[in-house]
Image (cartoon, rainbow, N blue to C red; front, side, top):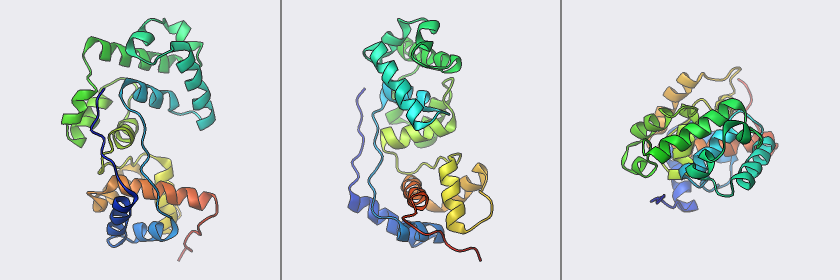
Length: 219
């Protein structure tokens, strides 16, 4: 797969963060508490999306262990390599039955030409998200994070992400988290840099958890 992934310098990201902070109190609090951070970049294509499917709903450590077994077992993570294994053999790598079906379904779609990763490049954000979630096992969160991390798209916000919900709750000094729908609506004011806002909030949440930043007091 070829990709025209843009490169974002720390200066570019910092300028976007300042733009966000000037327009929103939540962003201002996160910006003030968080040092500059780079863009989370991940390989895309079949292997990249397969890895994201593997990582769904398991711990970071478990996902890493399973992915190591998948890579070692397949040799090369390609549609052809996946389809050379039957479902029971793929389960040996640590994949659950649903994830085996998802990975084999993705492999079949790519191998048959029903899904083309390169074609995503020409689609706008909404179209690309819809194309991805049409794949069995790929939900909106996975589609949005894939496009953020693997395509470098600047204006996506995975509002179903619990860490983002919690980061906003902390920044707002609220008792409860916003719902994904409410948070998605809240994030509209962060356009056209919603992905930068997500990166900033993730970094802010991490700093709060590590006690490197103080949460605002409830009023």
